[in-house]
Length: 440
Image (cartoon, rainbow, N blue to C red; front, side, top):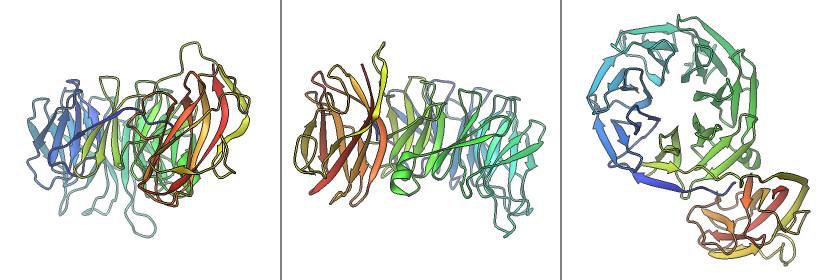
């Protein structure tokens, strides 16, 4: 895990079940919550608006071309809210039970497009919907049930750079493309059971999407590339990637719902994970007008998180690779780069500079940092330049008995040292630090 950045959290008054979040035309962030739509200013002031339908189960939200926000209610309704909080609802057609809308996005044709998770009354499970800014609804069937008869969920949707809409088919392991005229084409994902979820247009002319254990990229020609999430490789468990967006830095950012983590992947596929300071379940993510990332976090109560982007290496700094080398392993005999294990509520200082080919002039190191054999949990480590105040944010979170690892870039102090603070209630954990390069 990389060192977590500054995360400021704002409790949602009576908040429950917060989902998607987006930037509105007024410069504020707007988010969907089970029975309300919320607005949060860049300074963190939250206002909630009740939806007319009480059990709405709001899910997706997007800024429309008309200066309003549009959102989906899984009660079978598309909602529109003005920046001043006036809500209008448009029920979806249904004979017995209405469809269940999922994600929503503004299309290139001036309309809003949304996915339908299930269609109960017609048997055509899965449709893509289109709604005009005046409320006119058209639906396009794009799939049927699986051979087993189970429903096929259509989850995420986003406008592509090619003038089409792109969507995920969770149950059938595919990415779909639909023209504004309603003609759909599907592309299989190489990994079986990948469970694609949400999708966004990337800065590189491709579409990027979350899977159960990976981040996927698909070209407008349908070529899919998948990038495993490092913490999944280390633990063997899904981390529940959920929301995905493009950040102000030109990278793709995503949330890990089951891992209390925000992830970043560059257009070339280099991935870094940033754990949240406390255990949360981050869901939606959006780039704000203030240059930060904003998250919905399911907790008790739910929270809105403001995530400050990580600092980049100093201007003019060059990166030099080294043969991967283990600089710290506290499982080894006692020594400056070995044991003992890290004690809870204790700090140790390690000096990578001068080891493994890292010069004393290095300002930062590229490492793989791992924790293993924690005797208690939940816990966390905070890695920071030695001699500087310890930040409140953690660098990696873990549970008792868990092994976790990730790539990171760690700034060094003027002496070339790095402090590591451990907290897990009581007990110990082991730290392993492998270096792969440095900046100077």
